Amino acid sequence: MIVVTNRIEVKKGFGKQMAPAFTRPSGLDQFKGFVKVEVLVSENENSDEMNVNMFWETMEDFQVWRNSDAFKAAHKRDGGEKQEGGHPHGEGDSPIIGSKLIIAEVAASLQY
Image (cartoon, rainbow, N blue to C red; front, side, top):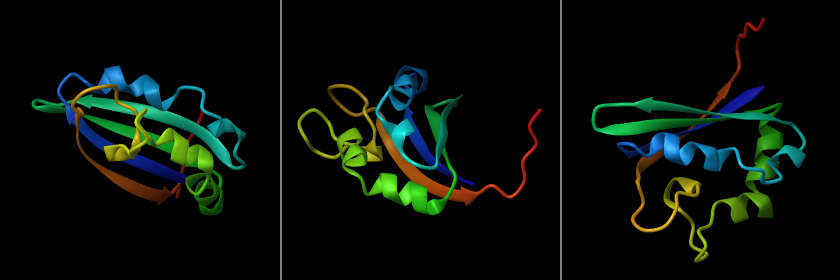
């Protein structure tokens, strides 16, 4: 299993406001190998950090989604241009300060 994390720094106060946009029904669950999405928000002194964690069975499954029309549609604004950070954030100036994509293999896990 892999976890794809989009670590997004946003303006203070926007993390919890933006989080639901990443878990809206979008057809993502129809892709082979998709497991789940979790959105974690850390409120820091000057900004918020969002960690959007997508769990996939294999890297190949993730790549199929990333190359799909559904991915492209989910990462466009209403005007059609690609969004910084790749996700919806509403109208006006972007609250997104920056983002980094991290792909990791699950090496160990404990679940009750």
